[in-house]
Length: 376
Image 1 (tube, one colour):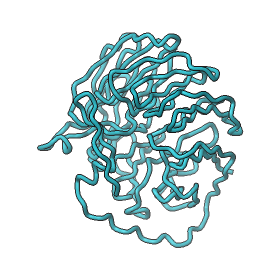
Image 2 (cartoon, one colour):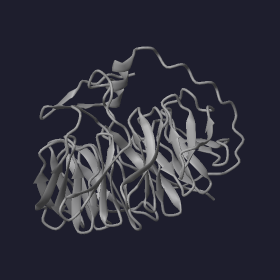
Image 3 (tube, helix red, strand yellow):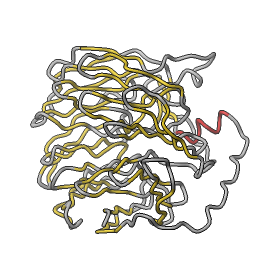
């Protein structure tokens, strides 16, 4: 497992997961068992692909009904037609990126490694705004505003047309943060952010705190053990928002009231997916676990993929999609976790979790292959 050096951040430290887990122990991970031949019970079809180039930051595509925004590590934003993957336009940001892409279908936003928020529209840079800290989470573009979650655990709201800073909400936290995407999403008229093991609800107009729901409490004798950041992706169904606190807990919050519905101990750095009944997560040991969304009671788990380094899952109507670090994509039954299919993407791990896209789904590998797929 690779080791990356810690990165100074205005007195904070951003840690790549590889370095963090290496610090926890040097024992090698057991070798996964061979799966053998897989009997295909549900086909997967590739519909289009786009070659972006190798990625070295946690790029998350912006998926809107008509357009998809993807960005290269060196700062080229590509906007694709969601139907066929054809490029609608591209634009140069002019600097390497640390986070992106966010979009409302018209404006697209990314963050550079020099802490600059850049918003683009119709192939041109609309505005730039210097941020006080780094960000590894895609900006949220919604309601004529752009929102940013920064690595010092502050949230900022900006005017979408001009980039003028409207408000900043600063929250105290532990002195370590993860160098991976956090949580920032709209739920009705509330902005929900993940901050230090908590989901918080903010007024998107003023930044005022509406509610604070703890999923995990920092514990331990050192900063590493106390790290409980909320990690993306989350599962939202109506007012129910379910999320994972890093290496600690999973749980669900009612975003209308701000109340914690339930939490359960779970060990992983990957986010969650779900539907109205189930919540699915991949654990650090490769076990895929499913909980009842309403109560948190465990429904089923499968160790068929044990010891494989798995992505966050995507729950679809045909099953649970998950990828491993070798570039295999697996489809598991929603009923019991049985293996329904296994395909290869391009021989490399995904850079982010599979994403729903209209009637299909989207996957992006670390080699930069953007692949649209669907069920026949």
